[in-house]
Length: 255
Ligand SMILES: Nc1ncnc2c1ncn2[C@@H]1O[C@H](COP(=O)(O)OP(=O)(O)OP(=O)(O)O)[C@@H](O)[C@H]1O
Image (spheres, rainbow, N blue to C red):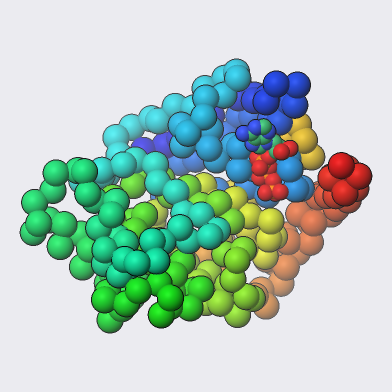
C-alpha cells in the first residue's frame, strides 16, 4: 500500500502550519521528514495517519494493506508509551485485544514480533527492567504486531543516548533489509535521516512547505557512519536547513 498526499495544507485557527504538501510514500520505502522546530513535522504525521483531518487537500491510501493487517497505519513515539505494569508480551498483546483473534493467533503474532525484534528472552520482563533502547524495541515490536502497511515513526530515537541510537538504527536497518517495511519517519537528526531514508523530505520553517525531496540511492546496509557520500548528503541537508533552523529557533525563543 502507498500513501499519497495531495496538495495538503493545514492550519490551527490563525496559525498556518503546512502548505501545499505533495508527497508519496511508496510501499517498501522509508521516507524521512526533517525540518526546523515547529515547522509541522508531527502535524504532518498525524494527518497522514488520519488522526486529524487536513484543512485542505487529501491523504489517500492506495492499494491493499498486507495480508493479516489489523491496522494499516501504526505509530511509534519518542516516549515508548508502554504500560509500566504490563510485561513485554502483555504490552504487545494490548494492541491485539479488541480484534477478536483466537488465543493461538495472538500467541503466534507475539512470538513472531518478539523474534523479529530479538526480544524473545525478554517477554516476561516489565518496562522498568529494560533500558531505554529495549523499551523502544518493545514499542516497535508492538507496532509490528498489527502488521501495519506503514509504520509512522515520530522521533523514535530522540529520547535515547547516542550509542543506543546507533544500535537501534542498526536494528531498524537490519529489520528493513529483511522485511522492506514502509515508514514515514520524522526526525530532527540529520544523521538518522541519511542512514535510514530512501527519501529525505526537507520542510521549510512554518508554514512548512517542501523545499526539496532528496533521494538517496544507496542500500541502507552500506550507509555506515564513515561513508563519505552519506556524509556529503548530510552536509548538503544541513546547508539547506541551517538558516531556516536558526530563524525558527529565534522565533520560538522570542515566544
Ligand atoms: N493541536 C494543536 N493546536 C494548535 N496548535 C498546534 C497543535 N498542534 C501543533 N500546533 C502548532 O503547530 C506548529 C507545528 O507543530 P508540530 O508539532 O507539528 O511541529 P514539529 O515540526 O513537529 O515541531 P518539533 O520539531 O519542535 O517537534 C507549532 O507551532 C505547534 O505549536
